[in-house]
Image 1 (tube, one colour):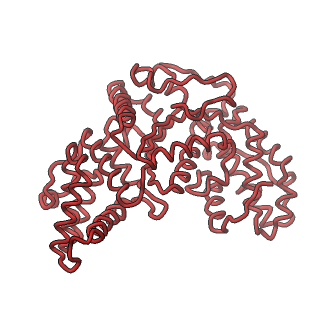
Image 2 (cartoon, rainbow, N blue to C red):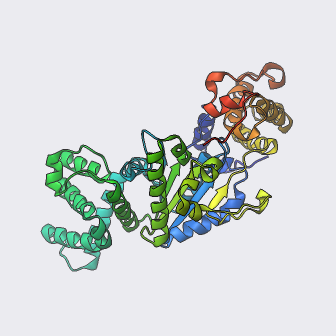
Image 3 (cartoon, one colour):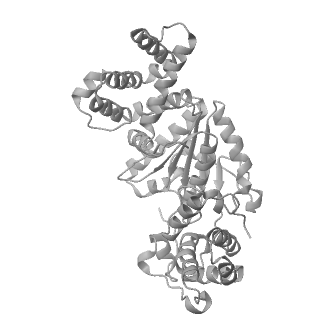
Length: 441
């Protein structure tokens, strides 16, 4: 039986509610992290590298349903425990195209979070940075705290020093920060909001607000890299030593026009090179994608320099994979792994539950194995894509009724059904026994 010691009822409820909806929980993923122990030591090393001013790039590969999003959010939990900020950005052709880094930066600031602040944490981070600057000024003892104009001048001077490197590549980043502070000091909340929106990469900020802050135009592709550099400096100064940025579902690049795809691959190559060059101290950059993206003709292979940077030799036996390599592969679930995962969820559900004994007896490991096998059969035998639906059925179809109805027996009273509407596109395709997956250009 898995341990649920020390898990609060609120945390259990958040996890179980998400599973009941067929979603990946936002928190509490350590409770469900089956098979991730082999990555834990390397992840800790990489987080330590980021915390001490280094930068890390990692590529996660796995088929649909193998747990890439789960892994990315588990990684974010580890990062937040080390006091890193995090952001998860879904790459998509229409909403967040990778070849437009200004859009990626905007999504980053919208999804920015910390252990203390939910998305978007941009405003509290910026406010905390100015508080830190003022504390440093007053702590130096060279300025009279009662002389506010002198304090403001000293803060302005310190701001320029802290953003000196950033200012050479993105001077408007520092100007926007100054404009935000000036608007706040002047009691102009609308102006402060507008300048902060521009700082977060939002387009269509009013011309009046931009003039007030001494900035012009909208953020572009190249300016986004400078703004990312500036954001990392701000995070570091206000107590967050780094940022975990996850670019999820980069395999969507394979479905865009060839010109946009080539630009996106080159943007990814540029990001990887900048990480390794040391331009982004404190950045932990992670991308996720399918094997077809990394190996197929419409993915990384289209850009030889990028393919070379991501090349990884995988041994025949996944047990001997190197977790320090640039690519990590997620092999997907087996029936045994599903049973282990189901047991963790059952034990989490049963903890402090009045129906605990009945839950453990009726949803024992043997029943979990039968449910996992039956569901995998409905998905064309592809166990690897079953976890989401398996957990949804387990919580909503089995555990809830056992708790609510004393005479309910899942072996007798629960009939597994899989409606087409509750399947994702990949899961739906897997149910078609005559469909063969082809890797076509």
